[in-house]
Length: 541
Image (cartoon, rainbow, N blue to C red):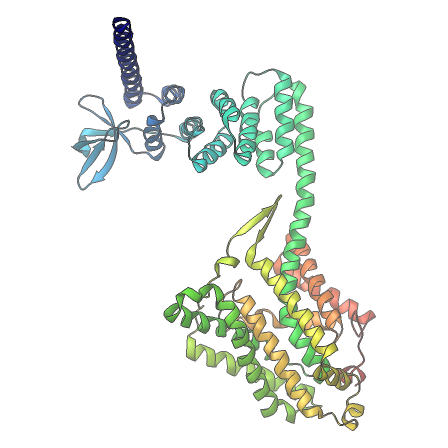
């Protein structure tokens, strides 16, 4: 019995040894074949090189990936003395040679003794397709996803078998969906039956997008498939028109939220005090510079708090700009009530002073204000790309609007402010100190403008001219919505934002703004008090 066991063990060892030898020989032979194919690139024409690249892809050996990548990058060289091909890296006056399969250093060679293997765009596409098929089975998720996307960009019937194998083994849903699209693209360029190609067209149409139109427009199909191709392209175009409209609405809401932030404070001061404050834009600018100063302190002393920098900057900006607004009202504007032209000129002069003061302190160039991690990046909603900073600004602007409504409706200060807006003399006779209501209203409007500057610092350049970009649009929002009416400001801001974004593709940015201004003028001719009329001192006058 022992002899039989020993005999079986001996036979198993012999079989295992033979298997190892066979696998080793097979691996060596495969490596020699790959080496031979790579070396043949040195003397091949472009057409022959394309066939060699396909042969390398069919080996399925991931070791050829660096060689193909070097070929695509133009880093493959042939040694003239023995026609051996290497990856070349510049090393002074010579070239450092690397084995294209093993990655081992092979010494240096004078540049004159080497010939660079040329490549054109068609070859690069063939290489991308080969790299895609070779990396579809990689254990690295990112590599597999990139490989599937490269097959879509460089469709080839030769990669079809590898893609179908990858689909069967792929467990990741996102990568599998990309692979299905890659398979459909590859099928269109293959000799598969008509029904398979019709199904591939349906798959690409279902995926949609501008890339799909490019793919369907570039393929050559039988006459029997041309109606399907035309219908698929038309369907995708209709789908894109809808999503373009949705994108314009999103951009309009984004612009409208900016206008709402910039115009809310102006609506309060204009409605209560009847003042055309040309320095309102500079309050926005001071809020942005307050954010810059807060971030500068945090970067130098408390870097771990950077993600909280905007939360810290909001009250700082409100207090700074509110204090500046209070000083302006008490020092200049209170002496000019009832003289709108003088008020306009005085606030315009103040705006120039503030701009020059900021230029003298911080310089005329843009200042860097960073995005916290939670406001960086974007996400896709079908074909709609939404950036986090824009989304948070919309949420913030609506939050400020709701807080201001609560202040006006539920607080004693809000009640007094509304009383002064509706009938100043009656409010004064009831014991309300209207001069101080004016002062604190102006400070509140300036503080809200400063908070708008904090938000704008995340999407615009922080410079002394920041406020000038929004002051005219803010006045248009206030006049269009109804002087002193917050709901009118909300509707006006988002309406003008969306209208601007729908006009820009057809008329351009400048002409679009001119058209909006003309439409507002025509609207004011019909409704002089705006969308939501509010009785107040400025209107009664």
